[in-house]
Image 1 (spheres, helix red, strand yellow):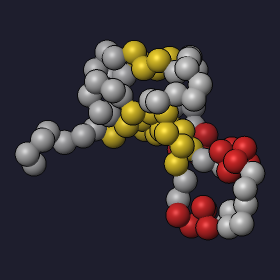
Image 2 (tube, rainbow, N blue to C red):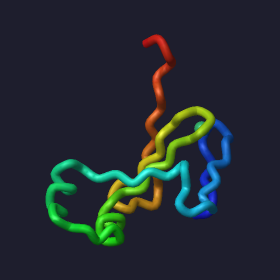
Image 3 (cartoon, rainbow, N blue to C red):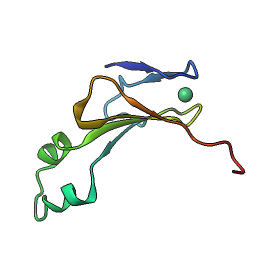
Image 4 (cartoon, helix red, strand yellow):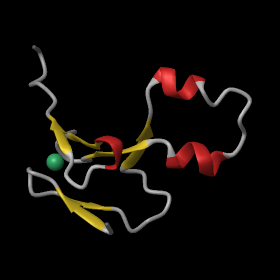
Length: 79
Ligand SMILES: [Zn+2]
């Protein structure tokens, strides 16, 4: 996935590795199972990919390696 089209029409470039627009997330409980683990690759593979649009701040999360991302929209400021 070299790039991702956000709903705001921003093209999120993912060709740069590591990408400043991609975040790796996992639950606190899952992270706890990696105590004393220093194998970054193994931890990386256990995470889910989250993209953050640099233009509109939408978050796109590929939960559990899903092919389609779930969209999270930032509420208007001041709310
Ligand atoms: Zn966007």
